[in-house]
Length: 551
Image (cartoon, rainbow, N blue to C red):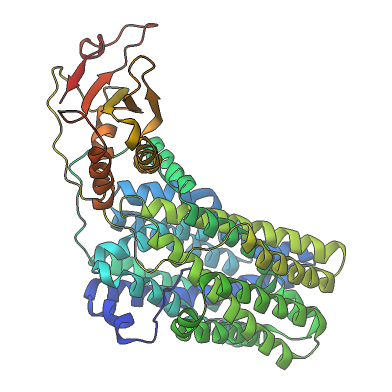
């Protein structure tokens, strides 16, 4: 279960709850909250079990790492699956793995096999199921609800989880203290069954593409390229990775703080986690007020300061009451930061790539969280718990200052969807979907007085074409006829060329029209489609000779 789901503005307005009128979204959302409750109970149980069977501070901190590392390893692959296969089936596969791994963990605890590495292994497998499910679930939100309700639906993902967070850890602590670890693990397994059955029963319409499915390698490459070309997504990823690395000490070292510094047990641990969840819910409910009065960059800075204050307070206090207040403040900063970052990624991603951008975002921030768990656990073990928490506070202040280099852009509307309107040109050869590479050349005639405007537009066009699939984009000027300019790019296959044109948005088409206005020829720009001919080996007949199509 991914606790970093973002939230958009306006969570207290009636429109925020509009997605719940959709029966499919409502059913899966409610089932997800049940599963989240079980996951929080299991997190408490595993953390406390590790704290009791291992004297190593590092092993306790690695519980958080084992929960986040799978997202770092699998998310990019899972995101490509979410954009290329049935998202419902990907969700079902992920949920099935969670149920199986949780059931096996319960059986091992029942049989008395509670070796620390076994516990970490099952925690890792459960998180692998979540890593498969989460990108498909978040990408499916746009398939289930109307586009205007997508920000509200994303908000509900965060508000729902953080509402459950207020009771889940405390309930987990009570169950562990009153009924034992085995009961907590068994109840968790039952809660994982709820979304599995719900997904099996629910079906929703997904707009199908007329093009064949992308190969996984190409899908992953396109997702990575789109992410690398989006300054908004890159800034969110960098800030999120650094924030996760610095702030995870609060949660990763909390069992040690309760055991060694506060002298408490599982109930105290659950109560403090509930304090953290209370602050998180407050931040979700107040998010619209925050966003109306402050920029996203200012909110991120304040979130880092709030978490730094929490870390410093936990390092210095021996009072459970003070720790609870500090954790509530930390919860406010935690959700404020993740909500803004998550929505930045969602709104900057068109539907054809949203599963991949979300997965890349989660992969890197969960990698930062896993690394942070190891760093702060090592610091606590080799130096002191106090020094580790103070180091976390200092690192969070540096993350706040990193906004100078990686500022977060303010965005209120989502990236427009592709038009998916393109008539494939007729060709003279019998091309197969995998025929290629395809070379596209567009020749323009640009007078000197239009040259500066033309070059400005072509810089934009390079960005547009490259992010939807064009490779090796270049612009050449004819040395003998200076008015003639040639735009050239490649796609790996014929299908990739068709897919590129299906991904263009209305704004992208408008950019092309603006370029055409600067063309000075009597006829429209000449477009040539060619297929490259290798000279090192024989090829099939339709690829044995270069050809071009002009139109």
